[in-house]
Length: 67
Image 1: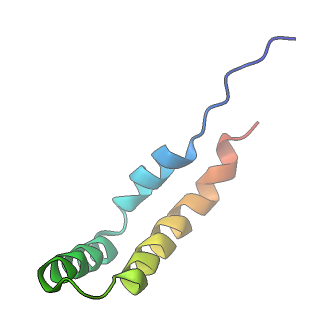
Image 2: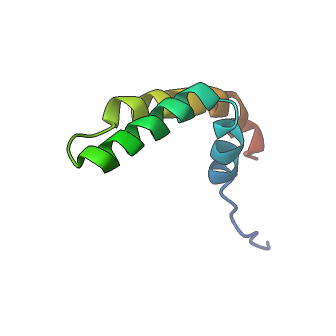
């Protein structure tokens, strides 16, 4: 029995799905810009909004790639 190299499709799926969340990405990038100027605070809420959108897109596709 030959062993196949294991391929993780999740990073590619996340990158592809990030394109479907432009509003969340724009808000997150704006927050990062504000924090860079102010030097105080974080963008945790905006980051989780972006992750939620990406995960919503990835979830139906993730298990289709598994054998």
